[in-house]
Each structure stands twice: as structure tokens, then as C-alpha cells.
Length: 150
Picture 1 (cartoon, rainbow, N blue to C red):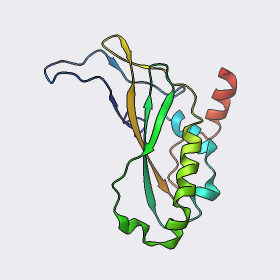
Picture 2 (picture 1 turned 90 degrees about the horizontal axis):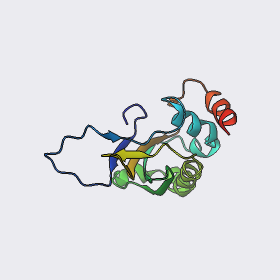
Picture 3 (picture 1 turned 135 degrees about the horizontal axis):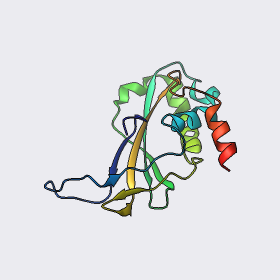
Picture 4 (picture 1 turned 90 degrees about the vertical axis):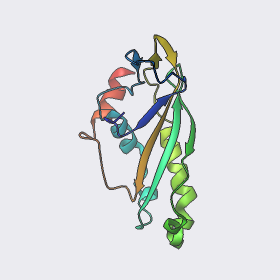
């Protein structure tokens, strides 16, 4: 979803000849930036910003047919030179734990569909540290939305 700067794909394999006009990607509850509002309202910035060296984490997860986010993992592939700083080495597992802690707290999504059938979808989300690139337009929105809908 380019709106959330997330990447997604369905688990269903489909023919290159099939025209996909009946897919509905899972949606996070709320408005377009609400996933970022949720994440940014729950991150512990003392952990994410403990090291001044820049690093990028890409987390992959699945939204299943019930709308539950599951199967979290980090996408490998960033060059080892990123980890030259002793600060990054010392804090890496703590930062990863913090990112996973918050992602695992996500509420249920609206499930995705493909050809009228509920389908699991994979997403990836990039999170850079230190975290300074805030994407939520209204910091209080997620808290207000969450309280009013539950």
C-alpha cells in the first residue's frame, strides 16, 4: 500500500493472464495515516533513538484472513558495514525487540479479499533509526480513534 508506504502481496498464486480487478488489500483501522499514528504513539523513542548512527529495519508480517497481524520477521539484506558502530551492535537486539513489541500490539485489520475470498496478505514496513521522520499528521488521532471505537 503506497498510502502507508507498506508493500503487500497475497499468498494466492495467480496466473499472469488473470486480470485482477477484484482484490481488496487488508486495511488498518482508521484513516490513511493511522498505522503510523498507532506506531508513533506506542514506540519508546529512548530505545529507538539511543544510537545516533542511522539504521533501517524492514519488518515483514502477514495479515491473515481474520485481520490479525502475525508471522513477524526482519528482512535481511542490509550491508554488514551498517553494523560497524559499537553503538549499533550493542542496541540492535533491543531496537528489534521494541519494533516487534509495538507491531504485535496492532489491532485487527479489515481482512483482504481476492476474487471474493478472504485471503492472507504479506506486508513489509521500513522503520529507520534514529526515528525522526514522523508520518502521522495528528499525534492524538490514533488515541481518540482507539478510545471511541472500543
